[in-house]
Image 1 (cartoon, each protein chain N blue to C red):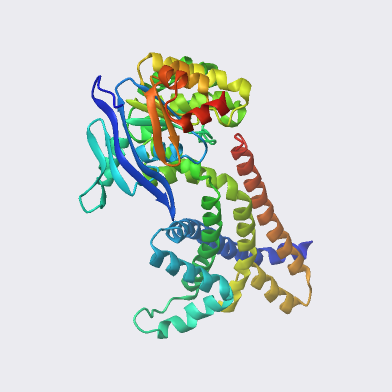
Image 2: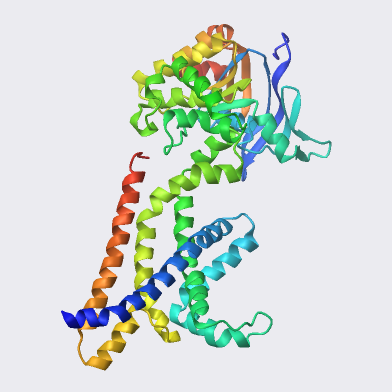
Amino acid sequence: MPSMMNEAMIRAVDVHKHFGPVEVLKGVSLDVGKGEVIAVIGPSGSGKSTFLRCLIHLETVHRGTIEIEGEKLVSTDAGGHCHYVAEPDIRRICGKMGMVFQHFNLFPHLTVLQNVIEAPITVKGVRRDEIVPKAEALLRKVGLFEKRDAYPSRLSGGQKQRVAIARALAMEPDIMLFDEPTSALDPELTGEVLRTMRELAEEHMTMVVVTHEMAFAREVASRVVFMDEGNIVEARPARELFASPQHPRTRAFLENML
Amino acid sequence: MNYVFDILPPLLHGTGVTLQVFCITLVLSVPLGLALALLRISRFRLVSNLVNGYIWLMRGTPLMLQMLFIYFALPFVPVVGIRLPDFPSAIVAFVLNYAAYFAEIFRAGIQSIDRGQYEGARVLGLTYAQTMRRIVLPQVVKRILPPISNETITLVKDTSLIYVLAMNDLLRAARGIVQRDFTTTPFVVAATFYLIMTLVLTYGFQRLEKKYAVYDE
């Protein structure tokens, strides 16, 4: 059920992807509307992370179309040939999205503040004295202002992930992608990261979150997408999907998780 | 003791030659090694294979032979053949040889950086060149300091090979005096000089390692 309420921030149509002979995505289609929070759930190996990575061109698709805010990233012609736009356009289009990884991928040789200001300075050419106050405001927002001169190795997993979120936000993305942001964290640290994400959702950030946190999916997501074996099995408003899953595979998965 | 002072001038002169070869080689071979490493990991197979072959050639034959070849045989090679005086011949051989070793150190360092660092940089919009310069190479430097230090200390001592082109480096100067005066004291003095040079290097690299120890990975 595509979102009818407003323009699509992300439009993915019939996305196919294989690693060698293994088909990971078998024709995935999804529209994400402005301000929507999409939770993508499903068993491991269902292709949900790969799908997310295709959206921001960390993986190339083999067939299908992806549009970000109405701009084509990749399209497929009638002959089944896949065409990506030129590299500078890829960079510009993917620049509308920020991404947070399971393993944070902070830069260990840079302090917390340096991690946040690196891309705005290097990529956008923003002046240092201009970006530092913004970066400090973001760090305050994620509750890590006092850690701004610490190196990442001094932080807990939850703190690292909140820095990673601040770092992504410093590029002022319209869309945030989260790839299992709490899966590498100790259980008692997931709460602080989920709280930050919830605040982001309340500010109407468009978000796609691959997650195993069912409570987060139920309470924060506007829609939940259930993926299995490279397909979207069900995509419905969170409450509906959790209350009455339509597909037996969804039901089996949820019974296992809850 | 007076004898030691008497033989100091020629030995100091030899040390000067040694230091010249050392410094020029280091300054030229490190950047060349980095460039070779980047070409070696290039996704263009031909480029990568050519560099691979070059490294094999340079590490697979003696440095002394390379020096002799450039001095004596290069002038007779068609097209590229040029005649170089002794000092430039030695420098060319040293730079080409050490660049191959440095290239392998850089390559190992670059490939030891987690793929997540590239992905983290990419989703922030950094180009490949920016990722290398700002994210990957600064981390590589920390990791490769110990092997670079090793190679650098070896270079100090390898400079003694230039005697085959009849240049008066520290060791050859010492040997000349030994043969003239029938005493081994010059060898002891030369050894002391080598030890002082490597001590300075060891200390310098320790300082660098400390500097990079401000962050853990």
